Length: 256
Image (cartoon, rainbow, N blue to C red; front, side, top):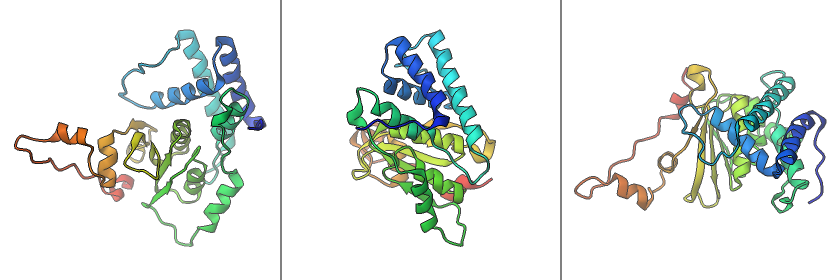
């Protein structure tokens, strides 16, 4: 994979990650993944402590510095409700192209192509409360472009790559998108790996949050047959299956 040139606005954030990685003898791509996990956990109220978190107090301060740099970058790039910005896609492509994990490299859809695709499908009628999905979401660029021109819809991002899912969750969070991100092979929807609900309470509280999605919630929302493990756990005495709770109607999600 050829080296990808980091855009100038993203370079200060890249430098924070690279300096931290070299100081601690870590792979920058792994640090980037941990940074995304740090963001998601920080916006997940009530979530249990991260059992796999390996960093100490002073190192955590560096992650807070990265978070501050990201928020300031986004504040400088997003000027109004119709603009969007994805630094994570560029950052990931640059880090992977320079690391030992080049085999995992990929190129995401350019920003202007995402905007063009949204314009090509634009209609005069502005619709809200619709489900809009991307089965190979990457860093979530197409969903962000869609949200910028069509706010008020429920966005669904899917990708087989976990890092891509984490980037999409963070991008949707800071852009005020409401929806969910699923880590799985979208060609095999029954094979759920992980999932997140993004900003589920935003219209009620105005506070950006993330909630981890369980396999049961995922299957109930798609009318998929429950896994044998779930059926065993929910089987009442007498062998009759308990009916799964219905997901709330989409209109209720956007009701103020």
